[in-house]
Length: 298
Image (cartoon, rainbow, N blue to C red; front, top):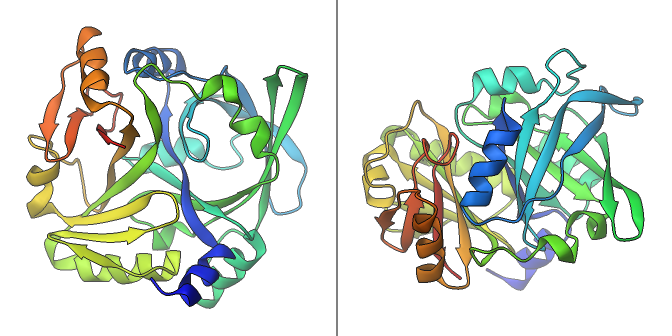
């Protein structure tokens, strides 16, 4: 990648901020992720704006997260189904059977303008707040996000976010994981074989990134994390035995760990089956509450 393109990325999207797994039972999903070796943050209810510039409202969702210092995995629970749902989480859960993904932006206004200019219309900038506990007492996490229009994201809801208070998100006390996880390595997009070039082109516009070819993978590397696009016919090479429920799909996420052997021993000690991959192992969708979770050496 040239210095010019690196400078471009420094002003816009340049990392995977987090993946999102929606669940109707936050307690059960949290227990499973703890058994997989993650330290999770306490339950944190969401307050969201229904429209750009609108007031922040209590909503039907809360989360628990596995934080890694830069990226994280969000377990997004529908904890009060009757409460307001300004971001349409109920519909997202019905529509998408894989992950949701949030990309990190250094300049959310530039991201929103670029998405519009490239034909990837968005919701406009919307605010998010949630209160979290810190060693110094309650603090408010604040962020601004833009969601890409669903017409352009058949594989799963995508948005970009700029954090204003990252120190309240990635608190040191949550960063030490028994499985040794240090960050999100990648998100896997599985597409029909005859559509891979179209999805590659769309993600190149979305991320303003170059594409690297690694065998059957079309890879868009970012400063932190990478998006990997593969044809359905190659799925068994990366997730042996896994069958996707539909295409295209954000089908799996991978975390990097300090010691792959130790991580696998921990997972298996907790009576969760593992399956060998070319660069590590993975836990099935059934055993990871809906979406395969892979592990690789940092």
